[in-house]
Image (cartoon, rainbow, N blue to C red; front, side, top):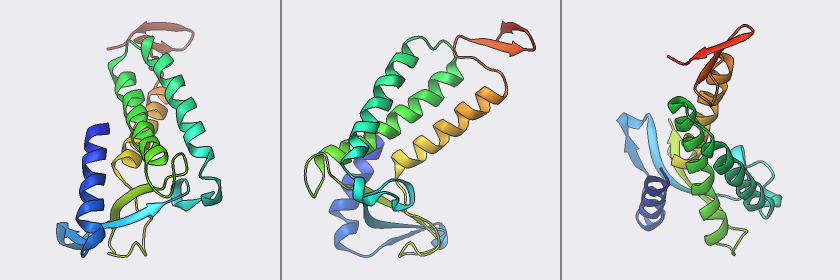
Length: 159
């Protein structure tokens, strides 16, 4: 996940940043170049220095969680969150304007080549979103990280 995110960001900064947006699927999606100093929807853009700290803490916590995870669906969910957090952390550490204050490169926009209808996002954002959604689904369906399934008061092996 991290490699795909990095490759797409590098392509975007070297090709799209110096040219026109690319229309995909008949204009449903546009590949554009955008830099985001904030969190989702560019919130808290004046707190750029905080995001590497939060991402590092989340990655550390995920590494601990992954060591004790037996369930394959949980490993996928946590791995997606890890990959997304690590992908955006790399941007925060190494990209302009300066180390640990970098802006995340975003490139996907729905329905508009200037991101007017929907916030611009990247592969790492997508991985984070899908991973968190899967983790919530696993929690609501009673699937535990140890491979057991909560069924009322007792647990049964996960099928």
